[in-house]
Length: 46
Image (tube, rainbow, N blue to C red; front, side):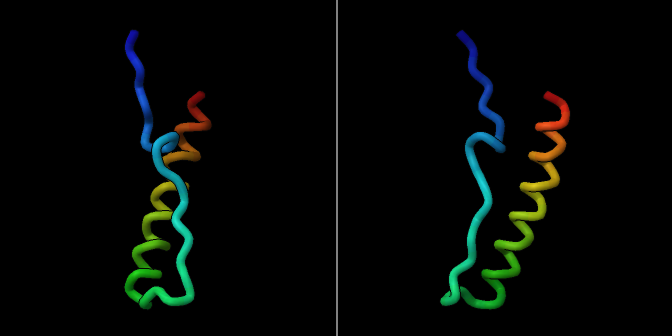
């Protein structure tokens, strides 16, 4: 058997904490935007 695990099934959105720094919140936002772009495209292709 051969299994393929996509990044979308292995990872998800990240949620910022009120204690996070501004830079960390920017990184979380950047990750989430990229994740949504890639995973919406992947779901559309299925």
